[in-house]
Image 1: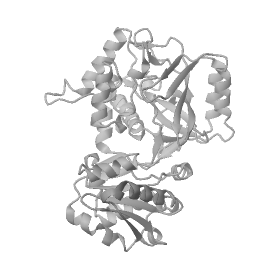
Image 2 (image 1 turned 60 degrees about the horizontal axis):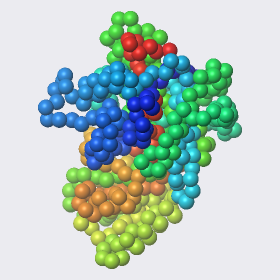
Image 3 (image 1 turned 180 degrees about the vertical axis):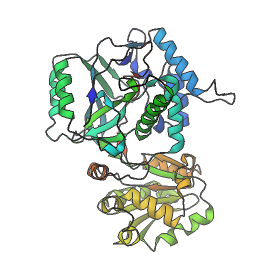
Image 4 (image 1 turned 60 degrees about the vertical axis):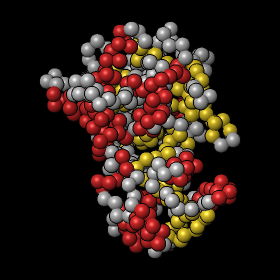
Length: 449
């Protein structure tokens, strides 16, 4: 099923880049405009110059963020700021980070995975994507001819056999890369070039499905890029590097796997719509109202978020609106989703919070259509509930919906059934960083394995 192979990755040259913390960045789709500028300022070779370059009013079809990214990549390679490994490798990584009141470590393996359509049931998505974002990513991959950021996918391994074998293989070896990022989190990377380990892992993974945790846009773009090449390259065949995509693979049972909610912040919601929302919602939800004004605001917000968190066994959503001095908890009444959408939605999909939010609140109550849901300019996301509330209070968004996190079991069950969640149903934390390894997709100067 899943075809997994080693590759000759491109890594930053430690002789040229003294502090790797200066050049890494999160995936493009979780970076705010302010963060984008900050990463540009940190270092001239930060990954942001490739993955999310600035746009200008003078951009043209021949001079734009994508062509500039390609030029930077070419320059960095020619100046040995980036170096391609001479030997095919698996790249084992560890990421140590705080969560709650403890320190957690998540392990992952960066490899190449054979591209297959979702219909084949080998690589499985779990959420919808934005059309415009995929179009933008396609222009970038056409220009750079490289995977700049690994797709985060997961597999089930209850006995943790794969990761145990990998960790054993590097137990007596110092990491090839070891640094602390600007958030104080530790990152390590080991090159594994032992072909025996390669074969063992590849054979073990053959019978496993891969569930995309983060990177749906990039995977769908890789499929489109391969098709574009096939349509425009006379000698394109199965040996071309574009038949593979770079992935970071993690075990679902890894204690370092954390899912946070992706809270929604909406723009361009008329005052009249906001004013009638709670009244309309009361037909479907039990409403709890908490004051949010004066000196008690912080205390009441803490109470509101604690109540939401205590109701993970129910479909419970938080709501806060601009120019409104109240926080609302909406708890779904029994059998509402089954009565309204029983013939439309499978049970596993129907009863998760993001479906209740999208199908019932957004589409049924607020009247949003698919075009609005596909417009990423009208909706923003954050994993921090306090930030979502503050941004609405300050008038930067019209309304926010606060969610509890989707459970990993729900993700696995929905993906295994071939079903798709609404957009941004999950926020796997922390994101897999961009900048540890790149994968060349051209058959020119950079030799592919």
